[in-house]
Amino acid sequence: MVKRREPTARQMRLATELRRLREAAGLNSREAAELLGVAPAQITHIESGLAGVSEQRVRRLASHYACTDERFIEALIAMATDRTRGWWEEYRGQLPTSFLDLAELDHHATFLREVAVLYVPGLLQTQDYARAVFSARVPELAQEELNLRVYHRMRRQQIALPYRLVIHEAALRIRVSDRAASRAQLARLLERSEADNVTVRVVPFDLDGFGRAASTMTYAGGAVPKLDTVVRDVPHGSAFIDSEAQLGAFRTRFRKVEAVSLGPERSRDLINRLTKEL
Picture 1 (cartoon, helix red, strand yellow):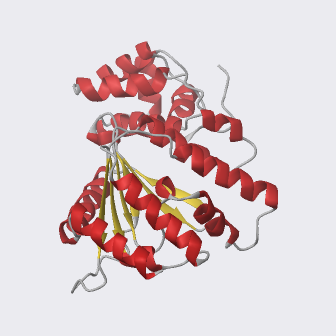
Picture 2 (tube, one colour):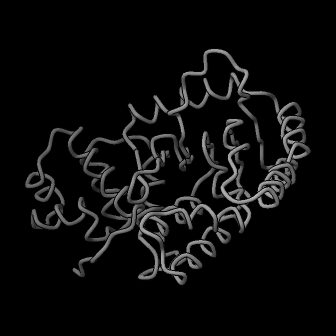
């Protein structure tokens, strides 16, 4: 058995789900290993993402763990047998792993929902806007890494899955660069909001009682709801959240923020007005 040096977030998610199934069945690692006919260390390696697992073993483990959710089992098998080496692998060893994990999450997602309060999200940023955001990092990035981050962000935008964005007016007004860059960024938002797969809604400043400024998130739909993922920014990258309780809470957060936002047409009107003010 060849051990992985650095499992991806997707491989870790499979490992986590298999551990959760075992724990829900009330079995420890030794008992699970006996049922599978392997050494306990192999279960440990599988559940830490350090070792892969075959379709046959996923099915056997699901059976031993009394999991009867066929759609969930098939989704786990797809994760276990996927051999995709996407474009993001070109950046391995050059950018932090979280950048690669985020691109892989986009690739496998069935939909994306996003709440943005201070910045235009990366999937809709212009190159100048992205460069200004990365340039503000402390400590400053070397020019080569700054360029790599910008190129990576532009390539992430080549997705066509359903995307719903709720963005606060603050993010539209904050100038991360100059007026020209801000104007171009608003124009990009207007352009992308016309796409069939994209919905942009704005939360205006004059909304009373908006206490959800901390709801910034990216919500990625999985093959089944159990495999949804929430991504939140942390000081040194991105945090991936996948517990069922938290996923439910973030679904509710998104619904509530979306419910108080302007509709798509009124949102475009507001963005148009802000563009003319620059």
